Image (cartoon, rainbow, N blue to C red; front, side, top):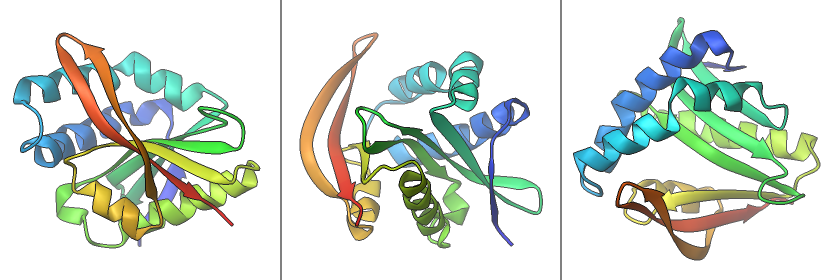
Length: 166
């Protein structure tokens, strides 16, 4: 049985392992291997993950089965403004995708947003990422496009998607 639990500092290496397994598969047709490496180093450093896990406005959820981490979801309440829960990260091991784990995470995020008094979900997703279809299936719409300079000559070319909760 798959369970969701809050991540602890001891889980950082498991989160990094899932990221290392999912990013090359998710982005190999979209961005260069060099940019994948740069972004993994930037976004999944011990310091970045420690900050996310210990920040009282954020929550980092792990999906586990038989002690194995199958995916993770990082959210932040009240970001970028009051009333919004931001999905910063949502990655599931490639061999587990399509199993319903993404829906489990989405239902959990909606529940958490409601418990924090937020009525909107918000996220960035690369325009070429297959996850755009996943998010649309779960009620998200494209709000606008954004190109972010992330340094080292790289950009993130994203859709900003939102879902209004009832």
